[in-house]
Image 1 (spheres, helix red, strand yellow):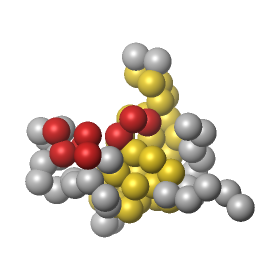
Image 2 (cartoon, rainbow, N blue to C red):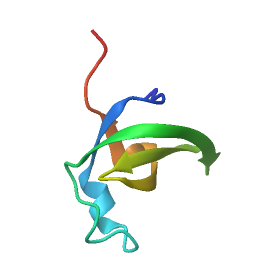
Image 3 (cartoon, rainbow, N blue to C red):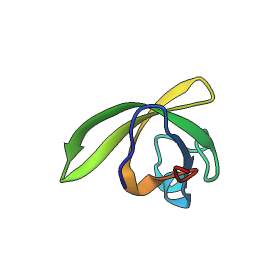
Image 4 (cartoon, rainbow, N blue to C red):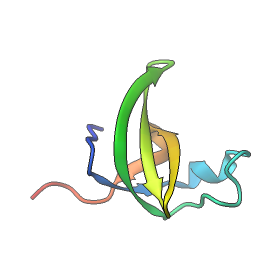
Length: 69
């Protein structure tokens, strides 16, 4: 998945298992990519702004909301 700054993303069910973010972060929340950061264990990490809070999520915890036209 190629994400860039400004892309809208949707959180996946997997975020609900992150103990440090529960119950704030739930599946189905919409956010915007604000940072495309480093890789950790060969997986990309993204800065996602959701409800005025910044979260750093792995690529498998979010999906792009819309495909480009």
